[in-house]
Amino acid sequence: NLAPPRGRNAKNEILRFAQDDKGTDAGLKRGATGAQSTVAVLDADDARVIKFAEGFAGRVVTFGFGAGADFRAENFEDRGVEGSAFDLLISAESAVKTREMLRSAQHDGTKNAGLKPGATRTRLELALAGRHNVMNALAALAAANEWGVSAEEAKTIFATLRPAAMRGEVLKFESGFTVINDSYNSNPVALAAMVELLAATPGYRRRILAAGEMLELGAESARLHREAGALAASKGIEWIIGVQGMAEEIVRGAEEQERSFVPAKSAGTQDDGRTGRMKFFDTSEEAATFLCEFVEPGDLLLVKGSRGVKMERIVAALSAKFAQAAQPPRNGEILRFAQDDKERRH
Image (tube, rainbow, N blue to C red):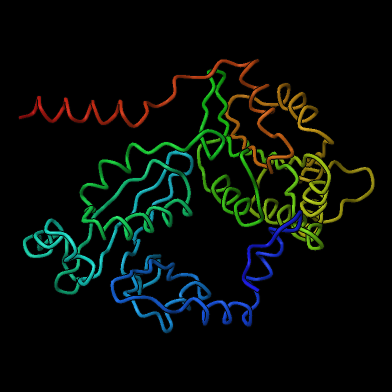
């Protein structure tokens, strides 16, 4: 049955379906038809997703970091919360979709050196943080290319993108600390991606994870929360804070991970490891009270959790106590500045 899962265990049902090869194959057999004029844009890095190409009657366009993708990212530069940069490689077949891409492939011998005839390479900067957003960008490029949107046009747009409220927005405070507000929702995969981002961001004295309970995970909830905590600890996150219900397992998983690496101390000795840098709070209000007194200059705080946990209250409390620094201009302002600058130069 491929009907969307319902009820409180919806996320876990989706996870089980994705892990079930038989269920996936059945879904592919049902959905693997299409007219010749249709196009499927698929993640080439996901073995389950790419199976949808089998038996598909239309044209398949792929994206990813892998060598076989039509829209491929290479030379990925992770700048943490400041965004990223990467080389976009477009296969010859996809490149000819627009005249601009075709001209670039024919005339730019330096930029496209070493590529198959007709393929293109473009260096892009993305203001959105994380490797996962590069994947989103690749998917958008692959789809937009069907309507003739080129990589050169994407250069202007990608540099101006800003996350929506509570969806990875980066808030800098005059006191010298920074908050990644990703409190809109959470699941194991999304939390792992943001932990990777937190760990990869250089230049901060302490990195702090405030992770709320991930709801609707069903019978696997405790295990998935423990794994999330273990991952955060293994990445060297200095402080790990769990908020509400099953998030206590995040703290437990982090503590277990720490114990597996921190040697046992002799009685009476001072613990100079990271053991004890985990806390659990029953509510987001309690966590907010703690963090308002705890944050210091040089801290990077990631706030994430399911909607029911109301993790945005932590951000609201911090914003009420500390003044925010001037935030980067939004898309329209940057585009107007770029246009004015272009006119001045001409």
